Image 1 (cartoon, rainbow, N blue to C red):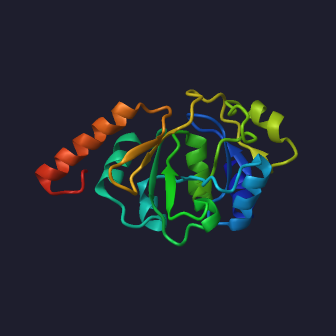
Image 2: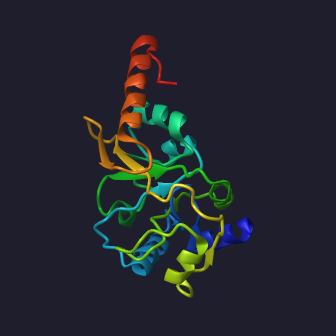
Length: 209
């Protein structure tokens, strides 16, 4: 029930969501109280920032500033998919999401139900993996319930996650760009796409598209 899940999100609730990698524990990423609940339920240290799930690259301009052409090129090639892009954040992103820093990670999940939730809720979702900190990341709705039954508001059952490994994270807020977490998308694949985008920009003078 995507509309009901979207209502819960807008009301500050927490909903576990499926992705192509692992299940995430999602709340309104622009609602400090909801984000605090995510940290509390997971037992996650607040010094660790959270990424935001977004429905497409159109979210860049809403929550990020100084977006480099490389970010748009990588999003065009790999989104929806298991790649998180770290970019300079606008002040609209709460400090608790950024863990007091000045950047935010964005990811567009490759799962139809979660993309539908993002579009229906109309807000980016703070959504770390749906497990207590230090525990194994869940790949089924049943595993989420084993962790959090009675502690969160809903679970969207999207079946087993196909990859079972977290997204790859690349820092595009600082040069030289660097991989912050090796994950489902190979490092060489990411950097090959970056090299291709730089070549295109150099030839066309465009934005890498």
